[in-house]
Amino acid sequence: MKRLTQGDSGMNGGVSKAPTGIQGLDEVTRGGFPRGRPTLICGSAGAGKTLLAMEFLVRGATKYEEPGVFMAFEESAADLTENVRSLGFDLERLIKQKRLVVDYVRIERHEIDETGEFDLEGLFIRLACAINAVGAKRVVLDTIENIFSGLRNEGILRSELRRLFAWLKDRGMTAVITAERGDGTLTRHGLEEYVSDCVILLDHRVVEQTSIRRLRVVKYRGTSHGTNEYPFLIDEDGFSLLPITSLGLQHEVSSERFSTGIAALDEMLGGKGFYRGSTILVSGTAGTGKTSLSAYVVDAACRRGERCLYLSFEESPGQLVRNMKSIGLDLKKWVDKGLLQFHSSRPTFHGLEMHLATIHKLVDKVQPTMVVVDPIGSLAEAGDRRDASMMLIRLIDFLKVHGITAFFTNLTSGGEAIEKTDVHVSSLVDAWLLIRDIESGGTRSRAMYVLKSRGMPHSDELRTFLLTDTGFELLESTAASRDIRSQTSGDVLPRRMQGTKRPTHGRDTLR
Amino acid sequence: MKKSPRLDKQNPLSLREISGRKSRARPDTDVWNLRLYVAGQTPRSIAALANLKRLCDEHLSGRYNIEVVDLVKHPQLAAGDQIVAIPTLVRKLPEPLRKIVGDLRDTERALVGLQLRPGRPASGET
Image (cartoon, rainbow over all chains, first blue to last red; front, side):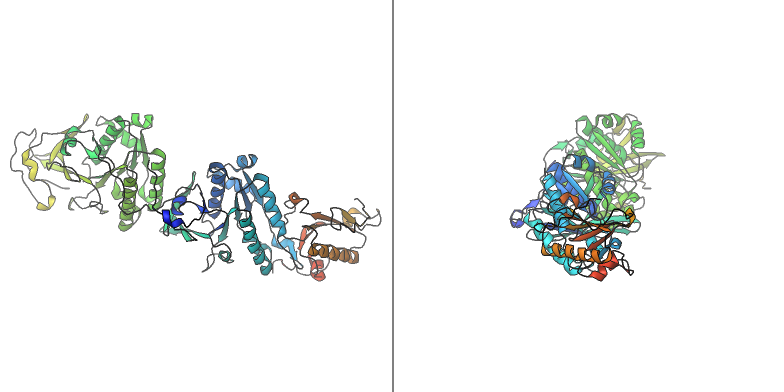
């Protein structure tokens, strides 16, 4: 899969960076945290500062051969080890391998008295000891503000902090300092005064019962960086950030075409099927066969040995597999072979950002050539329409940039113009198939037509089809169906009805 | 308890114990175990030790032990008593553990901290 690169070659200003190894963060920071300097991570309680700092250290130790020291001012080493286990980090093993040192610095106010001048040399000594023990290149101080709650002489503390950061710089340590958000200030004790090379803000709020996490690079001296708020999630793989891919339309296009698995449909698409990496929309009213069509296209792709990711917001994988069996598709065998991956979730289960972030992760993991989203309208339930549209646009862009074919289904409700989509993506898609119900003489059949398909000649015909237990059966096309294209024209009767297997006259009914 | 009567003038802060105990007859619980953490022979550390000895002789005559730990020589000992500030005086016995940070120039506060005087500890909860 193509790695996302940003054109920023001139803007780094020679700032050397230490890659964080955290998904998405290296993109946003254009390479990582400033090497040999301190980075400040602030946020309210529970925002994820400790986990971010820990992941920076762990990835440094495991991916980049840079051992690290974690000076913990809040949690004991044992507590930390337990807490980060859920991120998949095995601190005990790393400590044993001398790739990490965790030193718990406890400063209990009630057992301390101050009786004169002092300095924090004890802390320096412990830090030096830890750094030397493993040859550390990365240091985390989490959260050094605790010294303010343990000791009272602010004058001494501040000058010692200044000395500490200079000391870290002298030793070329790439340091991460965590601090709690202040009221109206970045940090409670004004640490941003001393640590100002790079400042990152983590935000965690609950909006309409959904928890939303966002990260923002407030400041990064000497280099360009993403300035937006980026949603992120924390799960069993650690942090994942969702860098907003350039919504500028700079991406490579493919001229390759692929078959839908339905010969007659391929015919309707200039004879060769859809373009790889294009965005395809299938819309229709309930029960018209959108999911079945998606399954067919997926089946055809898997037959070619391609991997597919099927995101279902309405049906469980089991149900999909079972239902597709009834039209002669065995999707289970592709699942077993690892070519087809399902992911089902109710749209209201998470916030939209979480959905997008999850999709990013899945795409990264599965590396599919095609992603099906069935149906996209469900996303409007997870947020308001505008948010859902935004999210969909970002998804489309993300998939396009990676050259992945996007196959979306959309439900249109009866009574509305069939070309209306809830989330307004119809102008963004490259190809649009509509499926309609046709009622005639007491029976109901379905018809599909290609409303648009950019970049290729396509059929204007309305092709009726049946869904039998051997799959899609497109019936003979007729010139007669040429006129039946848009519901807005109301009742349109076909001009001729010749050579058709079934009568196609009769009023189109949209339920 | 070891007795080490020699006072090393050349090296006043080497790791050793200064015992103020005069005889063995005293019960152990009455003997105070004090540990002073320093980092090298800085004027502040030397002052702290001098202040401490004076204080002990005045208020704990005959029943104290002072141990001086130089973290420059033994850095790994800092973690055990959770030493961050230098100098720090740790009262190990009698319990509870108390830490007095600073050069001990403020005798009154030091006595309160050591709980030899009643009063609110300086940096405790207010």
